[in-house]
Image 1: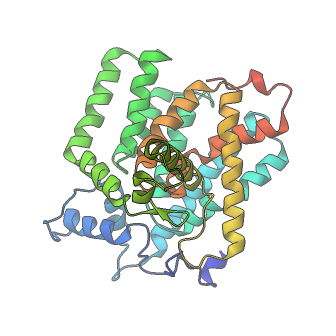
Image 2 (image 1 turned 45 degrees about the vertical axis):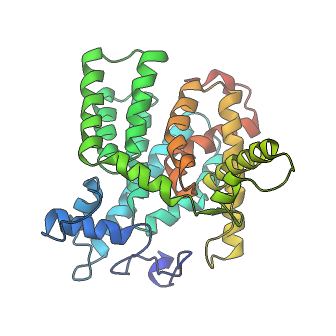
Length: 341
């Protein structure tokens, strides 16, 4: 609520608050053009056709210079609260103590994307519904219908929704057998059709190309690839340089990174500390042999790590990383009996 009265700026200096009519960060200009193209006969000569959910929301909520920012901002507040309640209930049912619940509430990224209108929070909300229903942790009725609908909406929201469909496919064949082959075939075919229509592969290639000039800890990716000249032996130098690039990308992905702009140092430190905690959560998944969760995390994260690795992309899986990090650090005596997916 404080953001209504105090200007909050992103790393580029743009204002991020509910009363700002149009936010320009996080690809907003791209989605505004896509919304105009799809629903207002805007410029039809555009390289990519965006998945339609977010452009549709911009049009439905009249989120443009001639409209109001309040309705969509209130909607984002509502789904942020709903997503928090989903995960808090999940933690509570799995015996995370009150200190853990308070610690989860203090994670800065969900609060940031509640204010910063983008596909990130919306996708994370859909992912939450998918995870809870797919893994059946809440014993909900109609779980299959719920997670299938959430999956389709994810694919229609962001290109990397296809990775969740890939997880379902692999999970069916190699780990768990809980839906019919006909249902699986129909679901995968639908997701592939959406991917083809919206040229999500083209999105992915563009995402990869844009990463080549991106820098990690002040060193351009191209320099990592060509070699950092650490060793005189070229082969050894490239192997070490590529290894360091992978490590740098993982750290950036988890949020252990400097600011791109003028973000306060205290906020950068807080975000980096939570990023280190998420790394602990990754080790916790291995420790508790959460193989299905690890498979989901790997398939979801790999395309991101191949491109511009940023912590905004791990927002959907942060609650899972938090959960396994917390139980690993606290070493609950019965933790090894719970949720071994």
